[in-house]
Image (tube, rainbow, N blue to C red; front, side, top):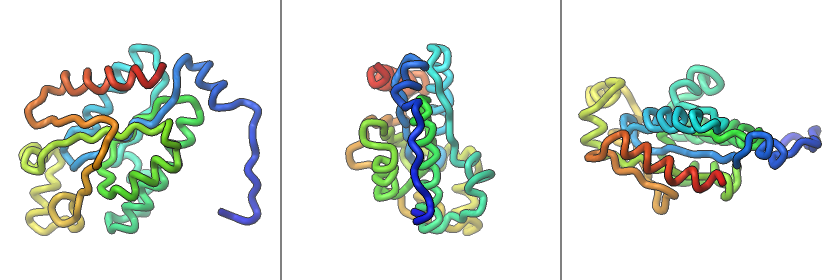
Length: 196
């Protein structure tokens, strides 16, 4: 933190913004391997929430890396910085009274714990999209696993870099033999209770 800055507290609070929106704000953090379905599920959940007149915003790994985090690599220290920046952005969105959906591999437990610390335990919902590596490789929607197996991609989570699964996620969705519709409904049922 800079010694030459002073935090300014504004009159309109998070609570005021939540009242204006008519619901609580929180961060829904979707974590899992590449190809697990994080972005697909986050997108469909956001669409359903939007139809229910809930104010939402989605943050996605590829989109963020094309903008604010385009200076970062996939080395472990840059992955940590990537997630830290996203956590800070998410914190601003939650403070704005918006239900924020974030879909990121976020492979390290310590980084996800740091997100929880930044946004606050009461504002953080960890959703583990538990899809087997075999199923993710079968889907391989971006062709990343094929490239990683050919040695064209280094630090590929699940192949040449670790993925530390959540020990006690708020919600776990096992997608290997479950329909997208069932997964979306399970997440919605869980989240709607949190927004009251």
